[in-house]
Structures are given as structure tokens and as C-alpha cells.
Length: 213
Image 1 (cartoon, rainbow, N blue to C red):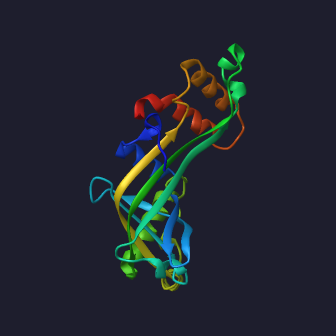
Image 2 (cartoon, rainbow, N blue to C red; image 1 turned 90 degrees about the vertical axis):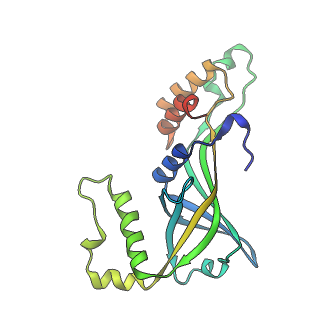
Image 3 (cartoon, rainbow, N blue to C red; image 1 turned 135 degrees about the horizontal axis):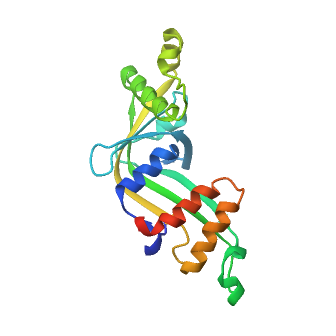
């Protein structure tokens, strides 16, 4: 991924927060047929340091399982907030008109060797952790234990765990850092008034960008 220095984020805590808040990952792997991508919710553990481990599961019938090798590196992409930025928001448009549209976004790329984990106890723990993480936003969170045991045990037979110790973790926060202060302020104002999905979250990132770069 091309990352200009002013868009680079290396703070592990910041990258971990994005992974936690946006757990649907794009898992990119190589096979004999070329590059493949799967979209899988994953959760992060803090060990081993400094980057941690990603864990998830896929259907036992997924061809991905045949692509996992002991020395083949995989890429896991987590997409955070993103928003279209219209040049009409820029204050400098009034001064000289030399402005163009762009797209703001925040992403984290994690690299490592993917491993298969085909153990019922590991799978149940992974499902419980992932479910608890995402159910925490609800006033009455659902738990795996709420479903009949024979039902969940049957489902466990149809999935396989995957795990990746992260060996490299990089982030790109393209959030108007290359704009003058007056344009950043007008972008924040425009995003806060905008109705596009994720606009308010992007406004927060633009406002906070000086803290994480």
C-alpha cells in the first residue's frame, strides 16, 4: 500500500482500535489460480506483542482452507470510516478555485502466516469472544449459550478456525492532513452536516488527526 508520510499511522493502539471497531476483514490469499479474497469478521488478541493475533472462522467447504500453507503470507485489510470530500467545502475554493474532489478513509493492513485451527473448544471460544464483542452494544446482548447446545454443536462441525499472528501492521489515515487549516475546518463542518454514511465518524478523524500522526 502506498502511504505518503503525512498519512502514515504506526501507533499500535490506534490501529488496534480500528480493527476492534470495524471487525469485518478482507482476507487476501494466494492460490494456484491467483489472488483470492474472502470477507470474514475477525477479532484481535493482544498477544504476542507488539501486534497481536487475528482469529476467525470459515465454512469447512471454503476453498480458502486449501490455500493455507506454512510459508505463504496473507494480508488482512480492515476498512474504517470513509467519506467523499467535495471541493465545494474548501475555503480556498473561494480564493483561487484550485481544488478537486477526493476521498478520505482510514485502513489497517495486517500481514502474517495464516494457520488452520480445527479444534471444537477453540472454535467455541472464538465464537463466544467474537459474539460478545459485537453484542456488547445492545442493552440485552445475545450469547452463544442462549441457543440450544445440540444446535450450536452441529454448526461447529461445519466451520473451521483460522488464526494469524501479525508480523507487520500498517495504517493509512487519509483524513485531509495535506490541506491547510481553514480547509480542514470547513471539511469537518461539511461532514457534520452531510448525510452520507460514515460522514460524522470521518469528521471526528479529521479533527483528531493531529493526535495520531
